[in-house]
Image (tube, rainbow, N blue to C red):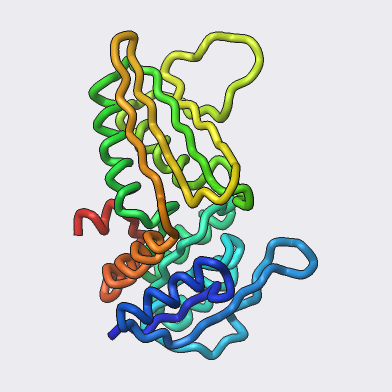
Length: 246
């Protein structure tokens, strides 16, 4: 039985994860309810003040938490599943740094469906080298980062299938579409958990790859699957492609 430390237990996804763990019979060793910094800086309650113990950390708190979380985990040789998005370049560098010391699973989206979508997008981009490619993502009106981390992951997957292409964000003003451009658009409205579409269009046909999240439980399921995958792994940075192939 896994003994999990849940960082960010006080958030909406934290509650979903707790319910899923109870249903699956996984042991939740400790819940760390990280809340927003009252000063409004976006910081989260520091995990280093905790004496929690367990086999692995699931982080559903806030992207800024990696600054305290990763040194705390490394000092205890604990693997970490990072399930947050919106990381700054400095925070991404810290993830890379600590992946040399402990196993870290990091994905912008923990949905198996989205992981497959990225694989399909890479194949399709290579199969239609002259097609126009547009990515549209839609989320609830409370989401902070735009475009979503998932949309960026999909754009990079498309780019991997089409070397030399560029990624652009939104469109306004005058001017034709730039050849080889992969354009990402973000919509924010209502209570939508997450929708992602990739439109691959030539002069004669269109291929649309679409994924829609109906319930946040799917992200919790992916996090638990990632945790099981990560246990026993050597230090390194792992993602959804590793989970699918593993």
